[in-house]
Length: 293
Image 1: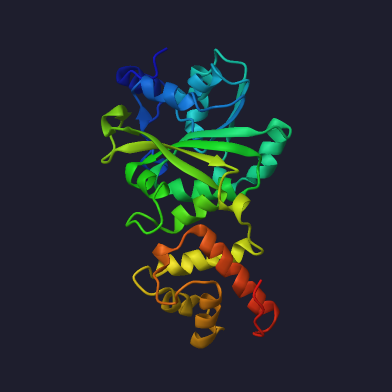
Image 2: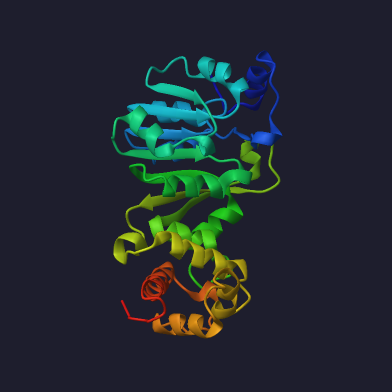
């Protein structure tokens, strides 16, 4: 069985009366080298999101002890039963990963063991899925995913660069993002309009472990507000979302964090956002009677 042969892929889909579902962002790999390279990042226990017809899954099964797949398209379940019939270390769950309690699912399926995540994510849901994984609290060592090339560049961008954004800072809080290699559009069927890239996010090496933060939700709100109006100064950008502070109070909080109120949010590292959140939380606890943390 060659799931990277376009003719065979179409034949399998037609035999099950299926068509490529645009609503699920289905673009299946037809380059044998790519699934193998992604699977090299897998550990012993793997969660795969969106296995499609099983191209990457087969490579994962050949390397890992246990593979758990979550597939949203019910029509692909019988296809996967066929393409994965050679393996006894894989199980497919028909569900929407965004509707699952990821930590509970991982605990139930892997019994508390640490896992790696591999996926060829649909472009339209890339950021929500990555953030759901990072925020889940599940014992994940690393996440290796194929995403739109533009998104990969953004995820691995440095503070102050034009590609640096809210999701970059949020990912950097939890781990280190690295762009591994690019994947041309011609490696898929149907062929997408843009190229892709594979990124690896290694958890446990982000700013969270280095600097900490007393209120992560507040920090993420600060990041969202700053990048929501990225052309404005930090003071003006935060003014809309934190209107319970006067402009003078906000300026004092920002300055007390060692940051200029006139800087743009895109210039700040996630560690600086974490410190700003600590300062703002301390101000709030003292009802405006500021005490530096």
